[in-house]
Image (cartoon, rainbow, N blue to C red):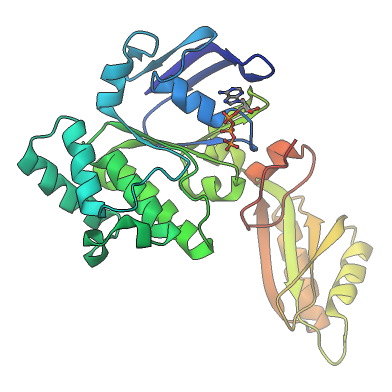
Length: 324
Ligand SMILES: Nc1ncnc2c1ncn2[C@@H]1O[C@H](COP(=O)(O)OP(=O)(O)OP(=O)(O)O)[C@@H](O)[C@H]1O
């Protein structure tokens, strides 16, 4: 879908992209990086809107340096910033964009109705955009990127400004763009956690340089860390401490860090599992102490660790890439 070779973009005072070589196939790909990492610059180059300083890039087999117009016919683009006219309705705007992409009037109207329905805009689509919420505006921006039935869409920070529910809905929509319509997606974000759930492949850039490009499952392989949470009892008012003591005596190694557990339960102990026998030992020790086992789970790596090598990100909340 997208291939770049030693792609660089230098502005007078900053190198936005530094010899980036990438090969992105079909599916949903996340382009992750802190603010200023070079994500928007990359998208503009891929659309043929901004020339690279060095290197080359191809989108759908077309050279960005010479085939910008042909690329923009086949690729949808959702820009980061608000670019919607406040005085027209979503229907009028998206029909206009469909016509601009070359669709005849009837097809443009039909495709607009379908696309707005798919992004979850119904009766509101006849009201002026100026009165829309941020979430509705983001949906209109997504609809205009999809209306001409492209093979690939480039979405620049589509979850920006959305609350957690709106963000989840937008991520679900993005996933369906590929699963339901077969349109591949390149989506940028500075929130690592959200792309972990949505993307098949993740590309991480920092200061214009490629940090890592892997399938999401490679990023999130299981670790040898076991998280265990138990309840307190009358006999053991601090069940977590009792379990820790018993397991330490049995030779189990613990991570220095503990986490807060569920309300009413203790802390979450993080221990090193050497194999199946560690699970058995934990289960038997919990039973011997008469504690309640709230959870015992093998931890997975999180994409956030790319930015904090050697640590284990234990949260499932979206994690912001540290700003440099
Ligand atoms: N037209 C320009 N002239 C000069 N510098 C620019 C220009 N466009 C971008 N830059 C710089 O290039 C770097 C990368 O910017 P870019 O907008 O691509 O980052 P980003 O990862 O998309 O971040 P954000 O999400 O904040 O837009 C930044 O340091 C930015 O200031």
